[in-house]
Length: 194
Image 1: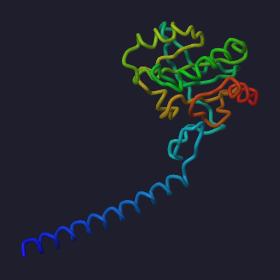
Image 2: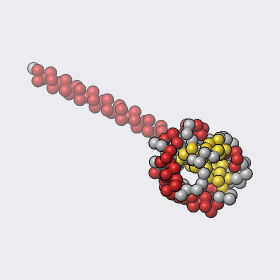
Image 3: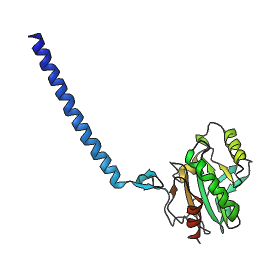
Image 4: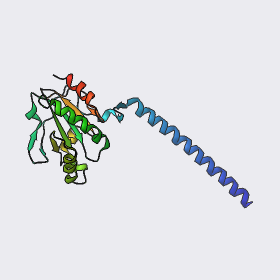
């Protein structure tokens, strides 16, 4: 009799677990379908519409940050020059992949185009690692330190690297690029700006 009751309870429990798992699987599939319908893939990184960044045609918000050497840099100082505004960190693999491409482009076009590389300093273990990383690779474009993370947040750089292309009038010219860039991509985007 005890075996019969135990067997019945075991079968009932297994049935409840089966029904629960089927319900969870169905709910998960629906959530994934809803996300997929709204999500876009940009450079291999999935971005949801709520985190789309600043709009094309919008004036790029001005900011003031210090370089590693303590020099103050304002975005508005570069009106009249095309600007590539890049958000990165020294621990970020995709950032490390694109930085040599950016340096090559900068070496060839620094008279017409400025690259401002904003380090997401809040995510670094310490600033010395950033300085060592830059010196080791001889990057010469301006490295700006966003110690309070306010510029990173204002530009919705949730995923790094994130890059904005800003024209000579200070207007965001292309949708933000999330993920690493190649030299060819940079060249193409800059050629389309005024």
